[in-house]
Image (cartoon, rainbow, N blue to C red; front, top):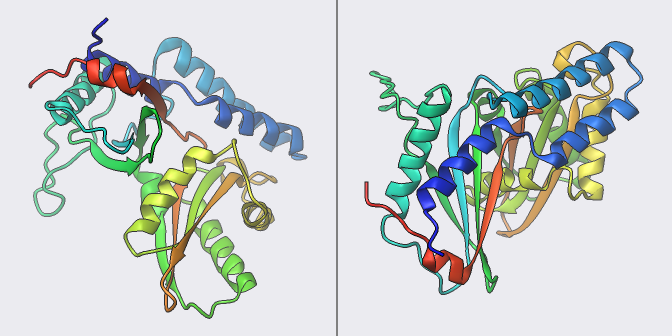
Length: 284
């Protein structure tokens, strides 16, 4: 049976904006169990209630429906079909228009920052999926609050492990105040100046699913700040921290942090290779 890629993509874009992923909900529930501040618990419960209303009424979890990051995990030997990018962009435009999501993209970015009311283009990244037997597509709307709080720093390669963790923790605490806490921080250590931010953003997809000793240590340091939910106090300044490690140059140590508020939004669809090859892509 031939499936229409446009309809699938549009549905996933709407889902990404209105349905908080289960791993993120689990993090909120875990935070409630661990929180000892009654007012902070109330605020965390408000976030869960907000997510439930958004899903039930098909309304955006956050009013800043952002711009749409799209990650295509493409197996070796598999190609993007003709019409892919046009189909992708049109599905985003129609999803935002039909659902009443806020259009947020301005072009050009300086002087005449004109909003053409399309929310295009999709910010597309192709990720090598090796010899996987599936094509995986991730739709991640991201608002300006968390993007503006994200950062990259080129550390000296002689930086000690403890100094690195201390510097990162302090910087994330400073940024958390402007990123609608409780936050989720995706960190990438190593790689190159351009690879680290991408890997940091991708590592956000591991929130609530996988952790490491480095991530636990950074999260603990962040939560000692006492900023708490909504910035009004409590143990939960960071819901989660994820860390990606990459090889790097002997004279370099890039570190990037992709910040997210509690509303870490994404939707994932997967296609077996034969399903991918049978998808219908329209020409717009």
